[in-house]
Length: 296
Image (cartoon, rainbow, N blue to C red; front, side):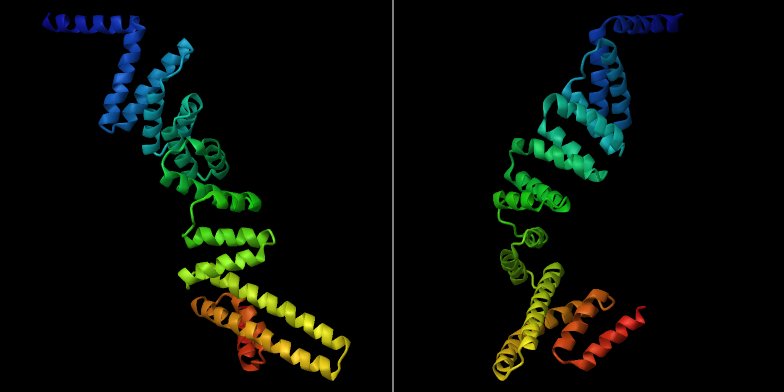
């Protein structure tokens, strides 16, 4: 009899709650909050699903703070599909920058670069922290480089704080090179190597740049001389070849360092072989030939 007396009030409260929509919503919201505070993320999503169903029947919207809570819970559970769906709704409804950051984080984790790029492009101006703006600017710059939108990347670089990270500085070198601004690219690449003398991408770029310029100059001078082989032309050629040899020695030094760290890299071996031939270092060129042969 006593147990019946206890059960009846509980049932009555449940019936009242069921009949009172406001209490229903508050109950789901309270359950979500309690579960979130105790880091019971499955509990958060269970309560959120009930809250979502209720709002669907009423054709109304879940409050943004509960969307954010549910999105965070889904992220913690690594349910990125669900987290993306929930946070996308939050961002659409409010443009809340914290929700934007969480959604961008999901896109990064799931490799959705295009979505992350468009999201940050739309909401960049809402960022208040200068540190966060610098971080997002670098991300957008890197995305534009990846998309080969070099002019856009260079325009963005002008508005960015001074870049000191050699990786981002080198991306600028690549963008300048791709848009025909070689002199500026060389200037920035040299700055990278002044601060980071062993930064391999910059070393490689400089070595290739010097070698290719020296090779083009060598071929142009030989073509000119072969058209009119006279004493004056020969004297002029010898003078120019000294300058060209100096360039080949510069690139040789860089490629030898790169080759020492990566002896199986065929590109380095081929460049060194050509450089040795131009410097009349036949024995060293033959060694490079043997290395290439052994890799076949």
